[in-house]
Length: 531
Image: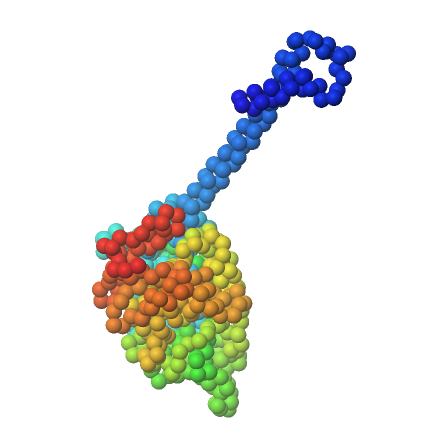
């Protein structure tokens, strides 16, 4: 209304002033009705102008509401990415408030699992068939089978079957394997016929491939073999796709559609890792890094081998064995590693400094990440670095091309490290164990390596880790809160017993971290000692 009055008054002024325009031929100077005419023209212009402004404001308001609605819907779709292989109970409950959608892009929770494991029964599958290490993938999928509390249910029986390991004695293992393939084993009793025959078809397929590949110099060793690993191998050989095999096992296990298990690299080939220590020596192969065959057999190999003759002799001996390994490939990657030690771990002579992927001949490779992993990171607001082995469970997934950029930028707001409650072989030696800031530095360095950047400074660690969740006990890595503050990282100390986080406290703490990104809520002192 004010604009209408203003422009109406302006029109009358035009009549009075005439703005230097001679208007006598049209309107007589002494005609009184000319004043309201000019006033009406001005008022009409003011009315039109006010309408234009109102329409613009309405469009801006609608645009704002539309953007807020899109942001809200996007926030509802956002889940989390869990990097690592170790398990904490009720992880999926942290993101349970989001809707259950299909596909990696819309999943509530995406588990990113490395495929570099070359120990245990996976080592024999890699030796005979080649392909990626699948033990950690199988372990995660089987853990995600819904538990209804009934030990006699079909779900419990499927879980027992895929977790079952054959005896360590080779002859006994082969006999039990045949019982399972022929459906004579008690493990089948509670499994329905349709699922039993589906599972058996892939076990039969891998059995046929084992028989086909037998040679005088190479026979498959069933010792301690995992039935789940054999099933995944059969499914991969049948479909020619690792992700198809994972999808099949997920379907058989009734893994919730809101959860996706993603291999860090989508491949049908073996990918091995190597590390360098602070004293300049190297260790090749994940099993030698984390769980050596025997305490004395996993000592690092020097960068320059002291005896080329011995290395050549070992290579020639291995080349006489007809298996999936390429001729001339590193002997340390070809040795069987079915039996390894988790209880007795010798300290490494120095700290691990860097990890990278190698080809079968020991040369460093820069590997691209699974595109679905990058999609999951692009559509998630939270990354959780798992409890567990730092250099063999977490970092092999982080150093891949594209992962560092996805974590540093984009949609990821919360980057939470769940700190181990004790020091292991990878984060030693015991004389100079890793501290909390060393864990964070290793992750930050790996992300920078993925991006082709030099190691970041302390003040830049917050780009890759925003929160540290930890417990304090004698065995746990030491936490310096002043250093965390300098790095811009928030420390959250939780209760725990026997070296384990309290499940409920951890779940609530992580939920509050997720909520803090939008609402700024704090943690309840009932679940945390200190922030």
